Length: 408
Ligand SMILES: *Cc1c(COP(=O)(O)O)cnc(C)c1O
Image (cartoon, rainbow, N blue to C red; front, side):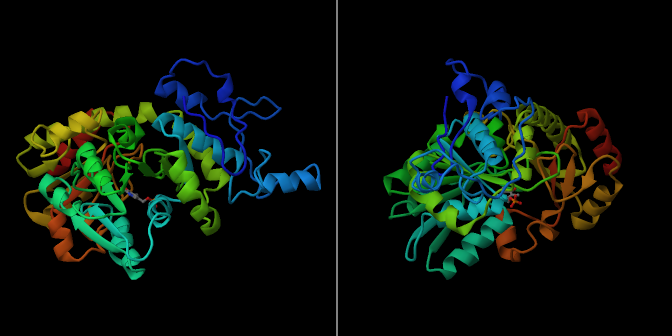
């Protein structure tokens, strides 16, 4: 299994005591990264400390030069944050993980640590709107060229990746259209022109998709979504190889400081224990809800990678172990009709979060994707009659009944 030696600060993880056979994801989710103090606590400890003390002035010197394993400052590393990082790395099958304060700080840092003025980025156009703002407004201001491509068109990728490229950024499935990008195909093309492939794996979670196994180099998360999955804290994470994290990410992140708090890390490390159970259950329910909606005469279209009618169905079958927990659909009759349906729901909440234990519905055109201009929005397929539904842990029959009565 992976063992994460902290580049700054140290790993006092008890991974060394774990058996040497390949442990299952569920076992790693409970056991990996566990670092018990001398008190032998069963629950992971929350280390709310910004600094650390040294036995001698000399130990402080050696701690800073990395000759001894010792935490030095919580902007660099913290025991509770390290537990979360090591556990997530073990589940993902990545060499290293660095946690951040939000998904957006993870997305930004994962790219910013690699690029400089004059570099070129190619990105699949269909993505979370804040990620789009970073790529279309913030990075170009610093002289970085960004080209957006249609993520599910191989010819377009071949053309875009025929010249030197620094970073390829992909969100698959995409939010809210659930478009699927072929990770293997794009990674192969990207590597031919020397690009690092970064995948926003928020929608699938590490339980349903492991991009590193399909050729990607870096994976990033908003831990706010499935990883917490209970609507409590914000968090993010970046996972990749020793060379990427040690060579690029840590020198950047150490000094720019998008640190995850120990309290949030403690919430998240406990959330990882139930991640597989929650995501698998939500995935099964989402499949049932998508099948129900696809049959309903009041529904114009359903986007869900687990439906055979979905354009990316075959690729999703190859690279994911389920269609996901989120779907989007269009109602007949436009935004007015859709708002009536949303307002009539009795179980499902109106909210723009996703991956939560509670089922949540949102109208992307007027909320999460409001900031995009109309042309961009429409080119992404985000019409006025589109709703995004994140399926939670309620019984699927209750969710279907709720939709049924609201559609009536
Ligand atoms: C929510 C989300 C993000 C941003 O994460 P925050 O934790 O809200 O900063 C990035 N990408 C995707 C796909 C998301 O859904």
